[in-house]
Image (cartoon, rainbow, N blue to C red):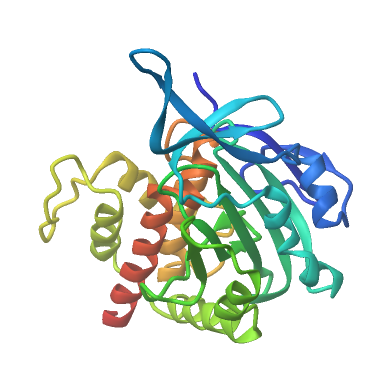
Length: 316
């Protein structure tokens, strides 16, 4: 079976996905890059085809190659601008040097087609006493056609190691995406994204609101079935209990998931049952969950889960 995780390193506590090799804490971004074995570069090279008399260059296309081992990462256009891993990790320098962040995790997915770094922001909040949410900054640098450079805030609930989604609006300033048609401008990204305390306060307000609203069993079943629909999706009818296996799993873990004692019977508990299911149970293995939870379909599920949870909480 092909593995999504190629290399990974983490400092401090074991990350939510439980993968990677532990390294010394307090590493600089450049040191973390080396420990995670992503201190390599990429370059574009011409593509050829066999013409009648000689090899001809394929116009408009180039091979994106990892120079350390010659690995073909993808075929891209001639106007596709790669971002080197070192430049991606340098994005964290000012934050780390100022003491605002510390490097936490970094690695390579899909044979180098996506390199990422995660830094812990030295700011957090509590929804309930001992129910803490920490804030992280995630930088994704894809060496792949049609994938954007992605920089986003990623809250993680400490008690259960769930990665949360707090994108309350489609254009919420919790993430910035830059296409490879443009040169990466770190100052512009920092200005657009912001790492201000106001962002975390917005997350806190959403969590506190969910924690203040009580659930009803049918609403919970309906909510879970919308997040994890059965094949051939249909609307759950009043009094009906038939929901998908994944939805039923999320319902069942509401009272058993780590941190279930916080906000018992509230939409905070229901929302965290979704994030717990996605991060720790949904899909085949942790190797693939980490990619999907941050960058794939499961990341979208979390966004929808939060939006739906707030809708139900508002109607409660």
